[in-house]
Image (cartoon, rainbow, N blue to C red; front, side, top):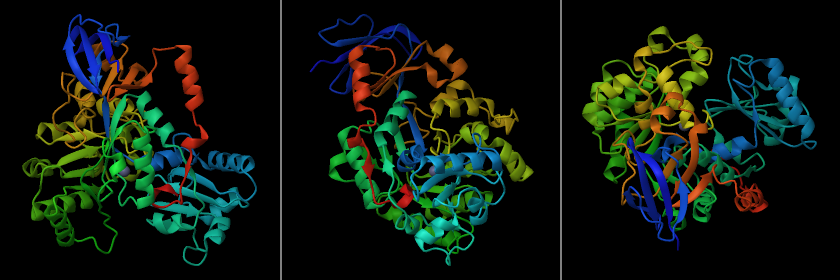
Length: 488
Ligand SMILES: [Zn+2]
């Protein structure tokens, strides 16, 4: 089998390097390598980076979001816009078909309930997900169809994805399209942070990875183990624990016990913690239980000053979402306590304290574009230009590094393109110094995973484009599932 020769790449600031890829691995890096029968891709001076890793997202929910109506900012900012989005979808849908909305936030029209939804769409059953992912709101047609009229008269259903999933019709999930979109922004590996993936979701994910529909390497936090079929590119990571300070079981000792039990069976933990109390309790629980390599905090959105030293001592990484500063900054400025605003999605001061910090977009709850997240990490500005936590701003290079560590060591050493590593790379259109000035996904020219080009914006050949047209959203890639977990 032919390999691939990338010529004229800039790597780690060194121009004019050629890179030979054979059997899915970087075989040689040197100037002026002979072609040796390999296919050639001329980089023309563009930077060759390790492929980006999005350390926190939700693949199934991303696929579901492709089939959904956006019900929140920035696209939908008020009641009129919400009404036209839902009514438009209702007109386009068959009579009685379910409508699925996502991304709702109170800034649109306050606390959403069945009455508000009924005034917009009464004929079709409608379910709208809050952008936190923790709540669904149903209209009355949906409450009748699911038999939840008495259990949830307001239409609001909290953290009940599984129960709701058994009562709503399945949706088509196109993981191949998710894979294409990730490849187009240079992503070669992702961590799926969905807790408690059920067997159906895991089977679907495994099949998509095994077939190559989803070409990225995937680390899952919500599975006990992964089926044999997907194992070359699908692996289990730490176990996701979700802390919610409003839960009855929210007690540091119980949480420490749960962590210790997972550590005892060799599993690190990934602790979802958002509020100040949840973050403090997560760190306290880890202090009680002790930490193991691989332990990490997901979000740690409000991290009080001083605790970074504790995290450093414990060796616990933080997987942060700088994109939320840009995407949700205005809402934070309204809703978040002033003292919490300064310690929101900390980054630079954590790095200064020696804490391992990695980036994840939390797509589809955030925009699935790591470059946008990098810009937000540098600029720390809301979409309207409001500066939030200025001292947490990082350099463009540090922002890029948030997405370059190994999936299993988020915030650890920055991966490098050199002989012997898997050929997971991202080719930019220009040298790195220029790309760092814009941090724009449009810079991505080609994405290669395991030696296979999964995205190539430079090859305009008839063959490639016709092949793309054939594979785009072919029916075989649309898998129906009995919806459960985050798939409803
Ligand atoms: Zn998440």
